[in-house]
Length: 628
Ligand SMILES: Cc1ncc(C[n+]2csc(CCOP(=O)(O)OP(=O)(O)O)c2C)c(N)n1
Ligand SMILES: [Mg+2]
Image (tube, rainbow, N blue to C red; front, top):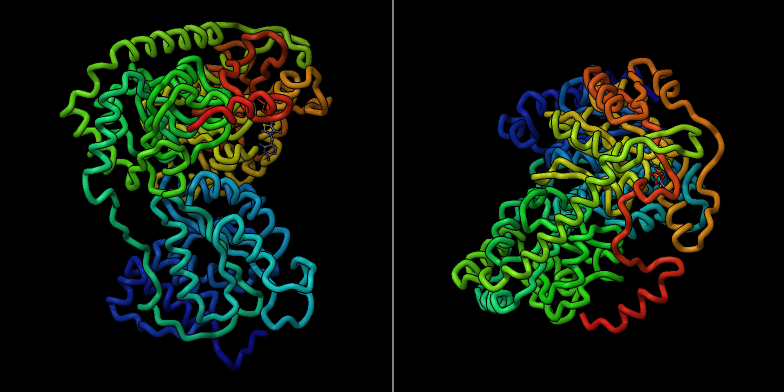
C-alpha cells in the first residue's frame, strides 16, 4: 500500500537511475561518486546488476507476477537508464530477444509474469538454446513463504518447479533471497556470454522477494566477463593434423554454425588445405557463395555439391559443428572419411567422431595456426583432381537451381490458377534483399529449406535461419529486434503461411515500436514441408492443411500502419511489389501465392538421407556399419 507519510517511494530509485543514465553506466556512476551501498528492493538491484553487465533493454509482458519489477523499469526508463518495449506474445518476444543478440550482438532481457507467460517465453527460448544465443529470461515466480498455492504456479506440492524446468533447457536461478543476486548474476553473466556455448539464463523472481528491501553493494555485482581466446598450448597436435591433411587427397571442411563470424580464418584454412567446404544451413556466407571451394549446404536437404563432398571426402575437418543428425551424422554424412580433425571450443563436440584429432579452442586462433602449417607444407598441391570434381558438382547444382528459378507460374489446385513456384519466388526476394542490403530471416518449412539452398551470401550476417529449432514464427518475430537495436538494419522475414500464423503479433508490435521491415508470406495454403515428408514416406498426406481461405493482405492492412501488397503471380509483379513495400516507412507485408504439388520444379529436392519415419531402418543400418 502507498503510505503518504513515507514520502515518494520512487525518489531514491529515480536518483540512482538518473545518476546511472547521466554517467553512462553503473561503473561510471560509481566512479562519479554514486554510493556503492544502496538500500533498495531486489527488483531495483536486479535492474542495476543487469545494467552493470551492459543490459539496458527489455522485452516485456507484465502480469501480477512482475508488477514490482515493472515499476522499477518504469522509473528507470523515465530517467533514460533502460528501455522496455511491451509485446503481444511471449514466444514472439523471446524470439525478438534472441534475434537482438544474434543479429546485433546486443544482450537483453525478457520479462514475463508467473505461469502461462513464463511458460510461453520458456517455449520460445528453445530457439536461443538451440542456436547458442545468450539471453536473460526473468519470470515471476511463486512466493518463498509457501503460504499456499500462488495462482498460476505449477500446481504441485513441490518447490521451485519453474526453476527446475528452466534448468533443463539452460541454467536457472531462483532469487529466493535478495542477497543471492550477486551469485545469480555471476552465473548468468557466464551463461549468456559463454564464448562457444551461450544460451538462455532464467532468473526466477518470486512475487514476494521482488519488493523485499536489501542492501546491495553495487561495486561487488559482477560485470560482463572478459575471457581470453584459448587454443592448444603447443603445436604438437596441430603439426600432426597438418601432416594428415597434406597426405590426404580428398579433404572436406564441414563449417557448422559456430564458424559464423570466422569468415577470414575459414577461407584461409580452406585455401591452404585444398578442402571442399560444406556449409550448414546456419553458416551460409562464411565462405563467399561463388568461391570455387564453396560446395553449398550438405545434409538431409543439402545440395548436389555439398552432399557429394560429404559422401566422397576421405578426410574431414569439422569446425564449429555440434554434429546434428540431419546435417551430419545420420545418412549422407562422411561415408568415405577415415579420420577427422575437429576444431571446437567444446570438448564433447570436438570428440563427437572417432579417429579424431581434437583441436580445442577458438576457431580463428586454431584455424590460423593450422593454415600456416599447411601453407608451409604446400598441402593444397595434391588436391587438384578432387577440387575439380567438386567444381563440376557445384556447376551441376547451379544448373539444377537455375532451371527452377527460370520457371514461370504453374497452375495450383488450392489456388485454382497459375501461381509462382516457391524456389523462384524466394530467389526473387533473396536477390532483392541483396540489392537493398537487407538481413534475411527464415524459420521453418519448405520456405526455410528452399531458402538455405537458394541464398547466395558472401559474408556472415546476411541470413539468420533458425536452424537449431526451426521454430515456426521466429522469422517474423525476429524483426522486432530492430525496435531495440542501436543501429537497426532493414530486415525481410521469409515466412510460410503456416509459420506466419503462429506469430502474427509482429503486425501490431512492429507498428507500436517503429520497426521498418518486410514480411513476405509464401502462401501455399498448407504446411507443405510436412505434406512433402508424408508423401515421400507414406505416400499419403494427412492433416497438413485446412480449407479456410485467408486474405493476408486484408488481415495485415487491418492494422493501422502496416502496408500490405500483393506479390502477384509473376517474378515481375513480385519485384514491383517488393519495391513498393520497401518504400513504406514501417512494416510491410507482401503476400505471394505459391504452388504446392507434384511438379518437381516446385522444390529444390532433398539430397541426403534422414533418420525419420520409415527411412529409419535403412539409415540406421548404414550408420551402424560406419566406424567414424
Ligand atoms: C512451432 C512449430 N510447430 C511445428 C513445427 C513442425 N513443422 C516444421 S515445418 C512445418 C510446416 C511449415 O509450414 P509453412 O510455414 O506454411 O511452410 P511451407 O512448408 O508450407 O513452405 C511444421 C508444422 C515447427 N517446426 N515449429
Ligand atoms: Mg505453407
